[in-house]
Image (cartoon, rainbow, N blue to C red; front, side, top):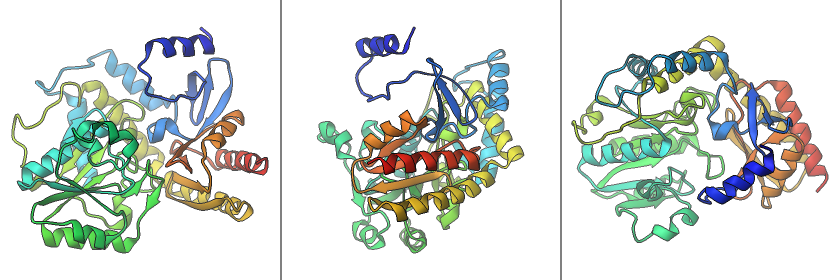
Length: 391
């Protein structure tokens, strides 16, 4: 089938919830992808911060192929080795004590919120402005995007209170004797690639310890090397009691989890939470292969180095074009803020052979594979300059 035939079929049969870019991707290699018409692109979105090793990484492909030939799914009734091995590796690498596997970031966040409420015996959870934690009914309650939640506002669970990201006084004012936890993205992705001050993170730590309030770090987008550390909270000295992860940990295979300290994890007993698909042998094999690559190929170090290089290359564009209001981010989660809507820039960059996206309306978001090289960043910045100069 050609591109238009595929688009026509989707338009007819899919429930219409996505505004897709009108190309059909076919295969990839590293940071490069090709559509079915043979057009080549440099992928600076990586499946929305998912394909951390790029496309067609040999370790990941081999691990999935080998495990698929042995055992794909067993359910949560039985043990399996790949997921168990991975659980130990991730727990040992993070300083947490227990893990629960999920399939998506929203599922992990939902489980983490349930655990915090169950453990604490309290019913209030704080969340930040400009946050994004998922689109389930529960996670919409802690996602500050009214366009997503408005149709369901009367159906959303109660007990969730918004505070201002980066404003410790706002957090203090929201706390009551029924506050169980605060859920926070150490670096906000969907909300516009925002990073708070070190003083805020330290103050939040101290405040929550003093008040006995749990910190849930949503590392779904910012975690697993994306921000130049294994997890972004490490960069700021944030000390979460629960952490959620997804996206990059499977390298493209659906995989998620929440991790907790020993005492907090004890809030759940058998029957309190469950899953059918999560923690499968196939997911475990994929995640182990990603972990192997991280250890053997210095992926986190490259993310930090290339992230610094990326922002250095973008800085002259901010000086050159007065409609660029900010360049910010951490590691290879980078935002370039404009003083106008950025959707047209995404389209123009596609014509130049680059996959990017726009979030929060006017922030160009770049989240390339963590294996990206300087010359690929140079090519993107050159293309951005060309597009901006034509405006």
